[in-house]
Length: 400
Image 1 (cartoon, rainbow, N blue to C red):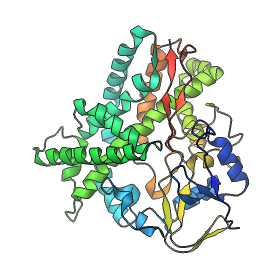
Image 2: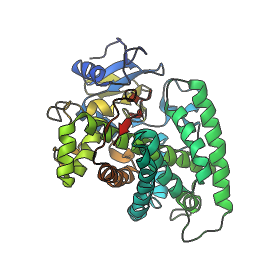
Image 3: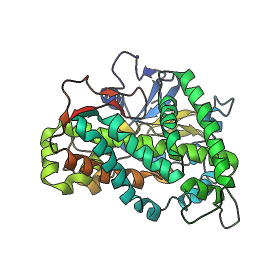
């Protein structure tokens, strides 16, 4: 039944970003669809139950294009180009097809040796100190190096890109986020133009390939679409993997019995990756949806133009779908555990999911093998979570 009650997700002082799950659990207990106030100040309908979220992710009446919002008055959702997360069929189909033809399984698997070399180099640099912030020393630089090399971002520019990305996905400073978006947009526009002028070659990077990508009818990505896709692939291509790597290690250090089990049985690595994705998904929510017509979702009537948030983190802890969902357990069957929604579902299932899984499957064993005595650094400040609806640690002090 529809209610006018609005529940703030966070008061700003309640530790929500450190542990949002009690809030989600309480909301879900009231029903699978609740009216909430987001950290950015938007009133939305939040979907929290696993079945309801999965159904909604595949419902064509829930659109991604912000222009379906009843509150739409500017194209603010497309501040950095136009990408497939903000598009619906048939535009989404065209965009995803053009990108997926270049972002192939073969291209991704071919990155395995390079990922291993990047991991080894970072571990070599870390080892002499005996301790480090794992986020700064390993979890962030590894995926940002890989995705920037894949897309052809020059090495000297990667630190600036990382800073822009962090400001854009955070809630704490909207002015900084806007400035970062402008700076990143300008940078990517220039980079795309460089790729456009470059001669094609066998070793062309992904962005170079996207500039020249076309379908059977000769259709290409427009300049605005190229900008949006470059932004999406670069940000999503490292933010989610960094969160996965640091989140997996953090959970292992909090559960030493499972760390010991993993060290004794390397085959549990897949279980670790899938359980981390379920238990601490790299993004708490999917991209905003907007109802294109009046509809009823999990028993809740919604008018046309309603803003809807699909909470992946709450769905992944739904006791109706997962047994004892608040227990972290790498022994869960990885195949069954892939019912989690960390990478979304339906036509917007994350294109980069195979890359994230590949990087984790290489980087985590390399770390644990290099440092058999890896432990939390009790002399350093406690780990900090980022104030963002991307679920990621800002710091993770470790020693070995």
